[in-house]
Image 1: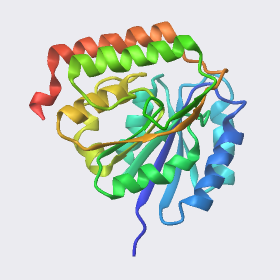
Image 2 (image 1 turned 90 degrees about the vertical axis):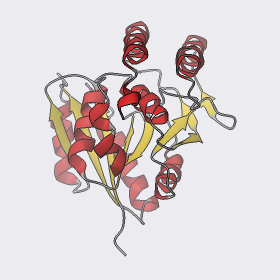
Image 3 (image 1 turned 135 degrees about the vertical axis):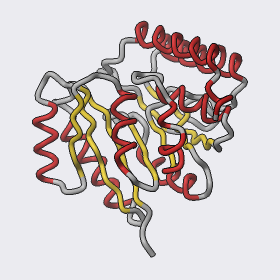
Image 4 (image 1 turned 180 degrees about the horizontal axis):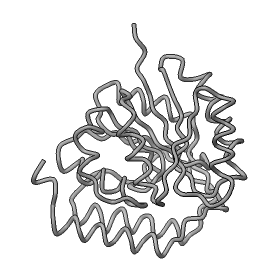
Amino acid sequence: MKRPTVEITIPVYNEEKELEEHINVLSDFCEKNLKNYDWHITIADNASSDNTPIVAATIERKNHKVSLFRLEQKGRGRAVKRVWSKSGSDFCVYMDLDLSTDLKHLPTILKALENGYDITVGSRLLEGSVVEGRTVLREFTSRTLNFLFIRLFFNTHFTDAQCGFKGVTKRVVLELIPKILDNDWFFDGELLIVGEKSGYKIYEEPVHWVDNPGSTVRLLSTIWGDILVIIRLLKTRPWRKL
């Protein structure tokens, strides 16, 4: 039987120091644990200004299962959407380069997609999740955003919109991704809100997650960007057209 194809996208920006080590860890894991899939890793470079694209090109030459996709504009959402849309794979996944989410959960979310779910989500807020090293401020803002601004305003049921560990089917890439407008940090939150409101089946996996103290995410500007997208969705309610 033909093995299902899987696209694993890693959006990066100025990650020259950690890139090769972490891509090698991911590739080794996939080689050992995704034997039932025809998998591929794409490094989606978001207009890095350091040596990230050079390091990525070197990895690409060494490993035929890894390729570089360079964008001249920043935006995690833009990068992931572009790679997924050109992939054609049966399943598309994205995760953060820091590998904060334990890779042991990757086969589980792929199996959920095989079993009929449309979108799979790693959650740090479900019972059974294990979170290490997260500051009180980040924990508070995450829970506030997910429970107050998302679940209350949109009457959704997923618990964690922001964990950088998600997967979708080809159907979602073809039907739903073109409707997701945000190109930055809340694109996957928008994907989940519009997806659930449109009837797509979502599976949440409680994950083991370890905070990366070197994260370059700017908390206040990210939260403000998230709120602007939430306001847009409340005004436009795009799921009514799907």
